[in-house]
Image 1 (tube, helix red, strand yellow):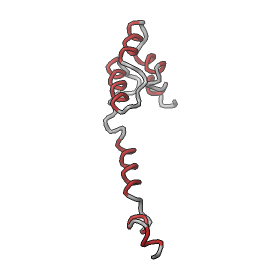
Image 2 (cartoon, rainbow, N blue to C red):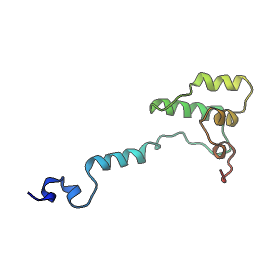
Image 3 (cartoon, rainbow, N blue to C red):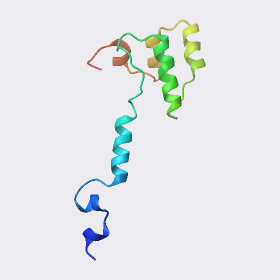
Image 4 (cartoon, rainbow, N blue to C red):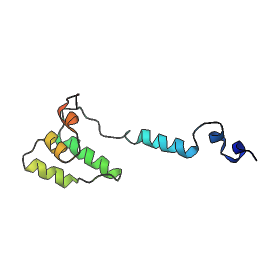
Length: 98
């Protein structure tokens, strides 16, 4: 039995295995349903949609209650997004250099 015969057909031909294709496809699609927004124009609804998206993907560590607490304290949505780690400076301000 040769090496090529002992490997799955895709790998023997130099292609990716089925598992590798699934992983790559999942990586490509993970942000397909990420909330749409315009950098520099962040509102409270945007932050809440980001929190909901993170929680639906099992990666969230910020709750909607926390976002609303920042709002009640008088912070701007973009500032709160940066402080909570939901946005980076460039996303919050629209500055493309960051």
